[in-house]
Image (cartoon, rainbow, N blue to C red; front, side, top):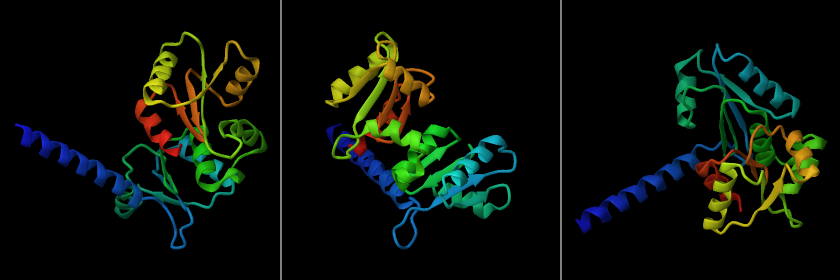
Length: 211
């Protein structure tokens, strides 16, 4: 029985290592190591794909669009980069985003391409998510009694993660920034440029790798 458990543990570890390798191997960079951006769309995607493309154009991010309705080769390429059928699917450097959520995409662009991808207002807001040395910190917009905020605090405590909490009910500046960031619920958590809406342990695990 013990040997079986060891084999299972090794197999699981091997699977996770392969999964991590696959994710890294399908990041989008050119031959010089510069990040590139791929946008996968389809004919019926509508405003979500249009909005993503318009945002990229506005931020002057060069990208290549692949419409999966037009060829099986585009479908295979999308799958190679880990995409499924929810559009748009965007790969920029080592970041991959499913669907269109403006602030998620803005944060990913800043993370990969630098703060030049941000507007002046966004720069001022998101600089608060970095320490004096420019290293990312954890900032949580929260309220005292929200259930998911309680879970997030417990998660950070259990993981030994330092964070800055900004109570949007008690702090006017926090409330103002929360609205400017288009927060729709608490907690709203940032790790540097990486945004996590609500309490999502898996997303937090990924984001905290930036620290």
